[in-house]
Image (cartoon, rainbow, N blue to C red; front, top):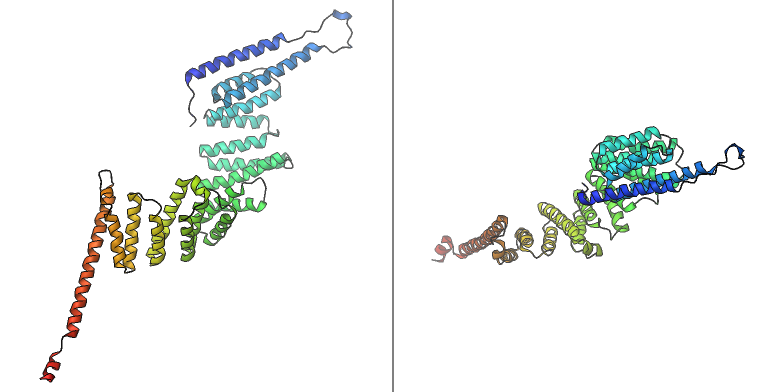
Length: 425
């Protein structure tokens, strides 16, 4: 929601606007020129200038009022702008000024968050000026407003109406209207995308890219298409599109998420080596965009690392999981992040039967016990310390048990049998 301006400033602005309007009206009257009138003796060879001058002054006045309303609206005083515009509409202003005032009134009402009223004014505008060249733009604005109101079905119908109206009015040959139609098509795709109807959004984004318009933000459309495809679990096309995106836009802010999507698609198809490669590239990235937006990169690094490493661990790809967990631990030295990553490293070492490395890893966690179990530490970290201690003790017990078992087996094998003793006697 737009923050409301200070009431005192608003009142002052309103007074100044009224004073300005009065001054402009007085100026218009003072400039009126009356032609000399000599009665019936004068000929009709000269045009009488009074009416023309008055008309010019009136047009200047209404134009000034429109400019005033526009300034009020852009100055975040939409209610004042609405009052000024209604004042124009209630006069005998020329038709063109009334048309522009009605359009501005719809914008001011929308800026004042009176969405239903704004839609009514837009509808009134289209009823009065159905054949006007501004109709496609009004329809586009209606669609955007309906979407903001959450009425997506009506929004889509208005976006389609932009295209049909442009064709009906035969305006498609002008660049401005071509861009309006293109804008409507992108808004249809975005509306489906926002509704979670990814089949439709993917279809529209694909069609837009095939059109090859230079006016399109190709990077943005490609990104939304990749996300749509990923939600559809269309892994093969997701991989193709993601690889193309990373090749063409290597420095954009969406790169970490696209790498995550690519790694997830590879993992879903069983391409574990490719998934591991993408995650490691993400974790080890030193791109300029990573330095510009570190929070975004850290989010996707952690999410990608955790999800892919956990999946590799479940699939018994312990060496792959180990590489990711170790890189995850290096992302942040904070104990709340590093200790859980180390714990996963310890579990992997256990699966690889590298008992000493597992024990050393659990010792790393226990060495930071004071940081993990302090008064401000969450209970989960305290539990993590207890689990690390338990696993370390378990490894020590298991190694002792194995050593005892091996010693017992060795002594049993080296002890001479009864038969051998009898024979010797």
